[in-house]
Image 1 (cartoon, rainbow, N blue to C red):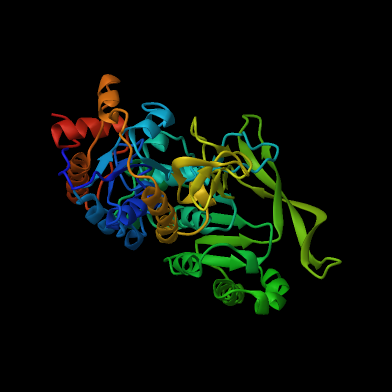
Image 2 (image 1 turned 60 degrees about the vertical axis):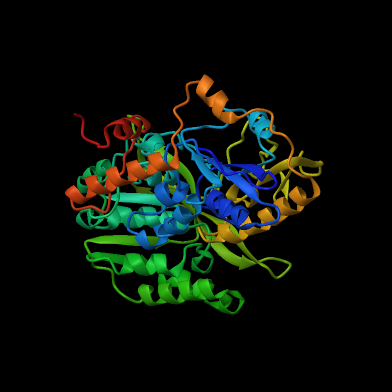
Length: 463
């Protein structure tokens, strides 16, 4: 696509990652008038929007409305989307750096953290990352074999993702079937035997990381109850004065729920002060139970609240266990990476050669790959503005240099089928049309091959 000429050439920027951090970065760059920027946004998938498309739960459509903002950004004549291009596979970091004045990595944190306990490799031990990708039709997880064959599922972790997984397991498949959930996920959920979901938390109710609305949403589901141990709530009650508004609301909600008897046919059970120590397997190498150890809250010598192991263990019979204890980034060849923290080494967004090394000129990180997996979709906007302010400063000091070739030629030579934003519009229309015909918001295309075929045909249905 030809860009109109200007009095002085724009600063050419490559943004790697078309999720919220990448689009908010592009938006902030395109608003700059001195200097002026031209932005190419790359993504390894043919589709834009990252976790808004493949991470936000299908029954949280209001959060997905942020894509309207991204669409306006994509209409700018100085914006391009180059999908189905993986940096490190189709283009190297060095080639990207040579072709652009500045490169921003906005690739998020796609790898889940491990529990590090015996039995984690058993069948039936899953990551929440894979489950979320699976029900959201992410191509990486489309064929993941989830077997929801026991009446109890256990989730280790009490963050928003854990609550999303719990809600999807407990909610009526008929209701979910009206959203943009993957077709294969609805079919599996209809056959699911899960009736109880246990969330396991090392600490107490006051330190649950989920937002109150997440708990309220589950408590409001028809034929679903919430079970909370009143003693656990009482143990954390003295902390109220030290808590922020979110934590206080969570504690208040759990206090109310602990007073009610849970008789619903399906339920969420919050199990606090318990740490997983082993996944127990049967003769087929499948999980048959989770063994956990009780923790006791106390006060350390310095007056701070501490947890101590009681040595008491208990087992939860189950063949379905999800770990949901956080994420970390994946390294990209040629980009300095902090293995300990799972982020790109950086100083306020400027990439550095190690923790204390010099700044790598013209190279930046934004979003989760910069700061770690903290915050929600909107948090990335302020993060992008911070990093873009550094980019503007640097561009003002160093005028645009002559690019050493174009990535378009390299991608063509390597037979990479690059998708454009116009291609996405075609695919978007196909998905919406297919969804409408089956009473859904949209029917997502769940494989890269199907996406490419749909672009050729303008339909999901073979001729």
